[in-house]
Each structure stands twice: as structure tokens, then as C-alpha cells.
Length: 205
Image (tube, rainbow, N blue to C red; front, top):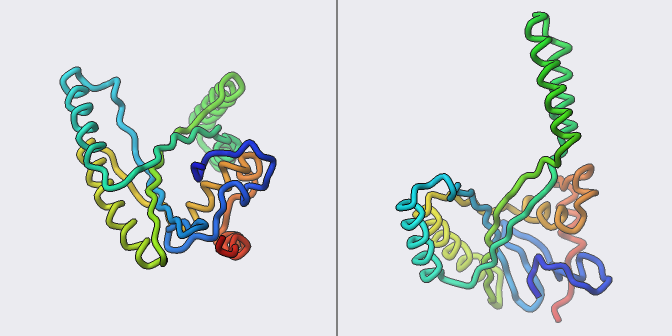
């Protein structure tokens, strides 16, 4: 089962994804399975010229053929909560003394509120999951870091940037995926991550 694919069985998120823990940004699963998650920037393909598009396709094909391991590509879409942004505008309005700037902030706030009322504001993020199987964590981490470096260089040739998620970000990704409503009001903190990490420890099967 894909590590980010929801099961149809009515089990807890922990049962579905079978996490043991996260250390140094490496996800530890049962049966000596490990994962590293890379966040990848996007490229606006439609704005490229036809020649540039052809070059990107050729480069992408070469990139796929040179991958050091199987990968999982994830596109994560989330609705953006604009309430915090609107609150910041309101605070700026309260501290602004110039009437002309006050009017500009008021007009912009009204525009944002009308935009949010009529449309869902979505963010789109892209992730690549790298797998590895090993008998010990040190071996898995070394191999995953090497594979992550090769994948990052491949994406660089496509004009895209990558960065590996750290332990907190990895847990937050799962938290937002399986508990999207709760994640908006209760994001993962370092303290919570430590508690979650310890609670995920499970015996080897």
C-alpha cells in the first residue's frame, strides 16, 4: 500500500500508514522500510515556448530513465485560510495614520474578502517520496541521502528546486493529510512531534 494512500478499511491513520517514527527527516516504517520526502518547486510549462517545452519533455524523460530508485510523486492541494491575512490587514489599518493609506487598506481588504467569499483559494505543493529497505537506520539514511542528491540534481536540470522535509515537516504532512480540519487549528509543534514520534513506536512484525 502507498504510504500516503488512504485505506478503505476503517482504521486509525497510524494503522493505515504503519509509521514507527521519524528521525533526521527519514520516515521509519515497519518491515525495515524507510522513506525520505522531498518538496519540489513547480515550473510553468504553459508559459514556455514550443521549443522550450520540447526541451523540458526530453530532459524529463532522461531524468525518469536515470532515477536511482522508484519514486512516488504527490500533488497536494489545500485550501488556504485567509483569516490570519485579513487580521494582519486590520492591524495595519489600526496603526496607519495617513487617511489615503487607510482607504487603500480598506479597499484591498474588501477586495480580498469578496474574493474569498466567491472562490476557494488553493495552494498546490509537490512532493517526491524516495523508498529504501535496509536492516538498519544508518544504512537506509546514507542511501536515501545519496538518492535524494541525485534526484535533486535531476530536477535542477529541469529548472526546479528541491529540499528534503525535516522530521517535523514530515509529521505535519501526514497530520494535514489525514486530519485536514484539525491541522488548520492545531499544527504540529516540536513538542507535539516528540509525543507523536514516541507514540508511533511499534514492535517489528
